[in-house]
Image (cartoon, rainbow, N blue to C red):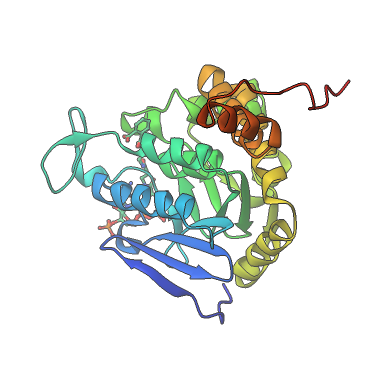
Length: 274
Ligand code: S0N
């Protein structure tokens, strides 16, 4: 994976790297010893970084990847799995990877999975919920839940089925087999497969292309695509964006000004578009 660009650390964490390069925020799960399996603490750090990505106006696109050349992410760390979730430093069982999934979907910026190796179990779901997936030709994909005693019946199933179709999603979950990058491309599970050493270059190239486009347009498209699947939560997100745009109009300003100036608002002068 060629990487001669100088990524700058945004914030230091224990289990992830969080870096910046020319408009891109890169979150790297940094547990290569465990094939980048996540614990609740890893997930907590990822969520923290995602919130920073949302708030920081210098970050236009987010890239999610794994450290080393073996794995993107191998899901929940089986060493810390307990009866009610995964146990972190505080000893409390959690399933907080779901929080990260929601943040990936709701951040109004594109999130790209840079899949550098195994994307398995909860790690597979992570790339599924990202807006785009660019895979190394060495990447391997699959769900293991029914084999190892877990499942993701949320985005990990329903959104997967939207992507690859119901039959294929059932095959992926029921058989727990592994799929090559070429097979993943064939079933529409990833957007592009590239030679391993070109993975970061191509990912940055795609990010740069998106950054040349209107951020508001990308934001609205993402919200619209999400709304189709996310029910009330998706509509809330889309509607929130519409409200934000409305606040930017003179018409909305007139309402506020009239209230503050203790006069009747004059909305007559604003166009009623056909
Ligand atoms: C990735 C696999 C296929 C790689 O196989 P390979 O190449 O043979 O390497 P290994 O020797 O198996 O692995 C190398 C070392 O890495 C350790 N390791 C790998 N994966 C994990 C892991 N997930 N947890 C802990 N350690 C891991 C290996 O143990 C090995 O270490 P050493 O050298 O000491 O032996 C293969 O490794 C594999 O199949 N891994 C397990 C994949 C898996 O089953 N993941 C868990 C699936 N379940 C989830 O992700 C839970 C989903 C979830 O999180 C969730 C979903 C919905 C709602 C809530 C939740 C939630 O729990 O939060």
